[in-house]
Image (cartoon, rainbow, N blue to C red; front, side):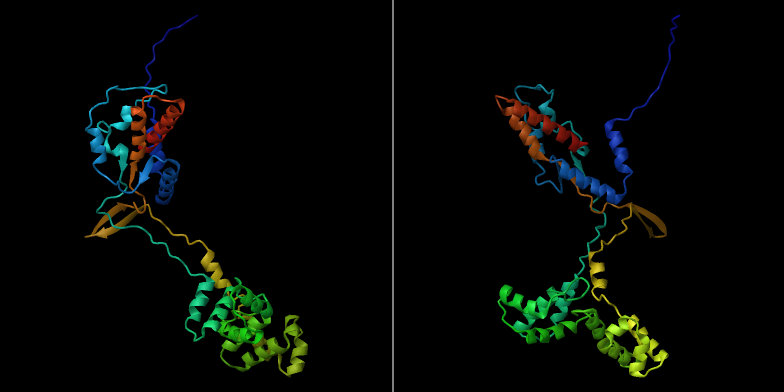
Length: 336
């Protein structure tokens, strides 16, 4: 049995522009900036920055209508709608994400110094002749991220001759190496862990425990690394407490002097970017949105010129029509 009924239904649907607005408005400031940059890269019809000429659009707007009227092509594109800006609101073709009166909220990016740059700057405070300075800079460039020189002095001397045309011998390179090893942090430029620890101990204040620690690392490094403490106490005729003080000095040394520099310079510095700022002005709370680095956007005029060239063309090929379809999509996306 069929029944007829009349129902009233009220529904509300969101337009594509409203959906896009909802997606953009809920983004944090940093994510919004990234979204704008991504759109600028993907859509060539969208430009950033101030427009080069302010009267070019007016020139197009004041022109008489074209003779062939609202010509439509197979893709149902009204070219006149994209050439004339008389009926297009300004907010459809231009977006300013900040006011001219706003404070400059851009966050400068700090460029950190690398470990090698820090050492080279320290070399500038040393008095060296031209050849010694070139050797010293080459040695600094041979230091790895941990602060060590892993190559032999003989190989470095050969490389200086072949790559830099500096003919020297092992003795001169080792002499310059002492200058490099005097740089900060202590222990940099060492060729082994034993040498690295010795360089750091020699920088410390002289004391009985310090002198004993130097002897342990210099003369009995293998026995010390294997923890043959009884043999060490017998050799130097010292008590267990004296040995413990020397070991404590050694434990406070840094086996990788370059680690503190390389870790800090390569780590990405994260900055908190607020979505809005709150300030107290004359006893009242003042809230301002953070426009920061969001650029000023406008629709590219080059694409309008392409459409005008298509409209003036007498014969229109299929490739031209495909190009107009592509331009239409990009212009719509740019205006949205």
